[in-house]
Length: 322
Ligand SMILES: [Zn+2]
Ligand SMILES: [Zn+2]
Image 1 (cartoon, helix red, strand yellow):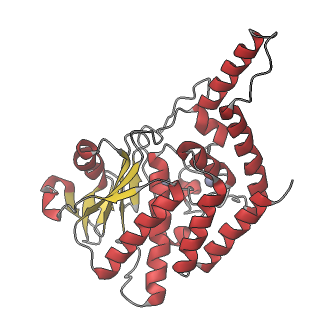
Image 2 (image 1 turned 90 degrees about the horizontal axis):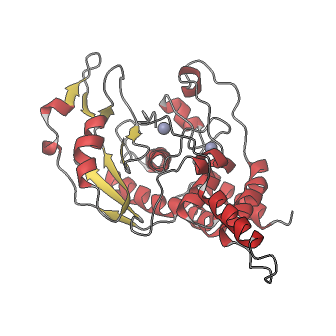
Image 3 (image 1 turned 120 degrees about the vertical axis):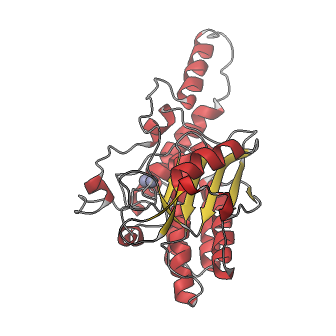
């Protein structure tokens, strides 16, 4: 989280993809008034279904209140982004050629950290409805001295996340990658003026990095493992959301909201709000119910019971008659 979003000022273009097909359909029917009615445009029907599902999900979600001092929105005023604004922004999304989420380990992982990495990879696949693949690990010796520092105040070693994004990941982006996501246990900082960063992603280049460093020691028992896992899942889906051009959420308590501290992250939910989840299923061409079923099953298996119950309530809301 605490993502320093590159290319933040997304152009708002006049036509969304779905609106384009809507208009094309209207033109086609106007020129063939004597012909039998054409079947519904699938893109238009899909758009309408997504909007209807968004309304079914909305009552389950809590609006974000005014930000308190120290919280992300207090320090970084942002305007937020509705689903419609997102669709109009020509976001970077998976394509038929680019459908795999490639996870790139960077540096060492102990046994418990490796288990968190494996589970976070699985969760990413369920969350975005895309296949995942693990790239061969890159050793820390690949990081040049110019991309490392010792923090001037507390003395901890850090890696420059901007270097990871631009110099390490950018040239390595595989041809089939919807996103290339580096995962490390080293502490990160994004450059001038920042102390550290939980993760950083580029809104358009399909690359990003996040770190387990500040999420506790998952080898210290069941409770510690669950705490680290929950935090890792949040940052994994948050940063990957940025890679598909999702901006920070300001409207709801939502996993896509900006996070300024571990305390703020722990208060944030693992789930996406009705606006952000609609962006995700639209961008990935997923369906809500099978997606939520997989997320609920994952959370049951990993004892994330609050999240499992939330995903099941979401399924029930989507199935309810309006
Ligand atoms: Zn962010
Ligand atoms: Zn949201």
